[in-house]
Image 1 (cartoon, rainbow, N blue to C red):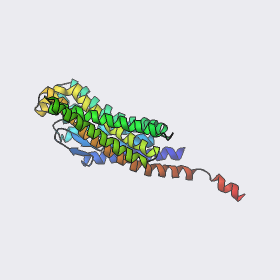
Image 2: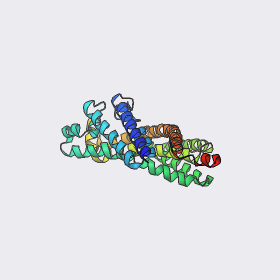
Image 3: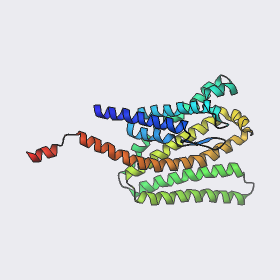
Image 4: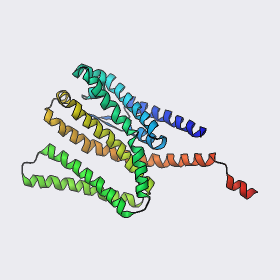
Length: 287
């Protein structure tokens, strides 16, 4: 038990360092002008899976804190004020302190909580070996992506004819169908644990994207529009684009890396536990 606590503290310190390095060296952020695409959430997701929701939530807080510091002192994007209570005060006054704190910290803390429960949910759900269950999960994921793509295309293109609407719907269904096919191929060679890692990684990334962008729309619609030089009605188009493009891309990357790191760390931790136990079988045979 003591060794497990020490191991947990060491892993927490290591992941905290990784988050800080990725943030302040720009390795964890990809500036896109209107917003940063991020991979800093990945150490938080790993922490959630292997340290539990409490320490995962702590790592999420560290993620939020580094985001606050990075956006306050570097302000690499036009939307930096939505993550910095200091900058937000200069933009919208005292209420900006609370608004930016909510956007900066709450989604990131939940990134350290949600994957833990998603992982265990899918391990139990898929361990029965039912192909029908797996197909339903894949269909739901594909439908969500198709809906996101449709909303983005519909808001961006704003079709005025039935023919163009049909084309946009077909495009959204094609993207969703592509994901369904990819998941079907992926799942054939993967164990329930590997699939659960993938869904946990995706859930962590999408938690960050959806809650951050949703928070910007609800709390900062007009201020965000002014900073970006656009009308308030156009903000939803930007948000839909970030969620359906950046969000999906980040979710796929998070899924791949979470599976890879999850399998390695899982084996290391399993080996550590087995080596810590007395080898009763060897003692019995020796006797």
